[in-house]
Each structure stands twice: as C-alpha cells, then as structure tokens.
Image 1: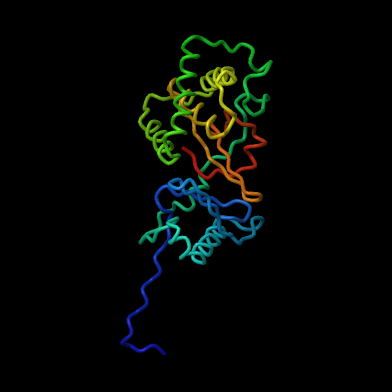
Image 2 (image 1 turned 90 degrees about the vertical axis):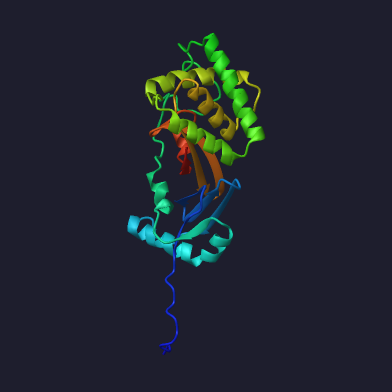
Length: 248
C-alpha cells in the first residue's frame, strides 16, 4: 500500500501530431507523413475493420500511440498536449476520389488521346501559361523542400478569394494542360505532374486539391489532383489503391 506521503502520479498527457506531421490508417497500419523530413513511418493498428466502427478505431489508435509513445515522441512525430486536438482523426475528413473528370476516359494523364483531345483548343496564352507553370514546378522541386512547397501552395489557395471550383472550367483547362504536357521534356512523375498542373490551374484562378496518399502492403506513396471526389489527372482505379493522408 502506498504511503500517504507519496506524491500522486501525474496523469498521462494526451498525444497529438506534431506540426507538419500527417497521419492515416490503412491496411492495419497507422502511417505518418513527416513533411519536414519528407519521410514516412508506420505503427501497427490492431482492430477488426469489418465489425468495428469509428469508436473502436479511435480506441485502437489510442492504444497504438500509447504503446509506441516514447518512440513517437523521440521521432518528433507527436507531442504531448493538455487537451485533445483531434488532428489524429483528421484523415477521416479527406475525400476519397470516386470519378474521373474525363469519364469514361478514365486513364492516367499522358497527353490527350483521341477522342478525348478533340475540341480542345489551345491558344498562345495557354502555351505561355503551360510553360511558365511547368518551369516553376521544375524549379520549385529542384530548389525547395517539399515542406516549403506545400506551405506555399496552401497559402496561395487560402488567399485566393476570387478562385473558383467550377468543374467545367477545371475540365477545360486540365484538358489544355494534358494536351500540351508531351511538349515539356520531363519524365512523368506524380509529384512533378501534380504540382505543374496545380501551378497551371492557379494561373487561371482554379484551385483544386493536391492530394497525397499511401498504401501499406507493399508500402507506396502517390499524389494526384482532385476537386471534391473528382480526379483530374489519375484513374479512379489506381488512385483508389491509396488512402489519402494529406490534402493541400
């Protein structure tokens, strides 16, 4: 029996994600994206995905975080807080893509093949904006860390009060980008192509979401551009293999 002179044990403080760390649960794994280090980590999340609802998943996440508390703190993936911030569950609010903006032309974007490209008119201003956006995306990825790039995209989107999310406008300008894409001499990589499309659309005051996703078994990371649940530059079949972890 404890002596009355002993000090009471302080309550365990709650854990929250550190700044610029993002989290999701996929395939029995809790995956962390540390944007500052451009690095992914994972811990096992033990629960029954068939019979368990959100409360059971929340409890499983809490157990996993407590089990790995010290390791997560040392890796600076989490921090101790006095009140629950709810950021660990934020991945549930990320929208999974369901459609492709060129449906039924549901394919990855490697230019605009016929008949999809028919009727897509490209003007001088389109060509200029395309090459400026492509050059800017290339330069950013070469000179800046992904952490700073994401922050810049987020700030611009937040300050763009005059921006629109009109799907017809997005379809038109995405088609123009895709038709011009083969003329820019750079390999087709999701990070570059997502950023270049984001930069091109921003020049037309269009600000869709730049979404990052992960899969656990085998591990893989991918990114794409979407508006609501509509994909702009990826097929629904392929994007559906990934669980969104970050939406910019």
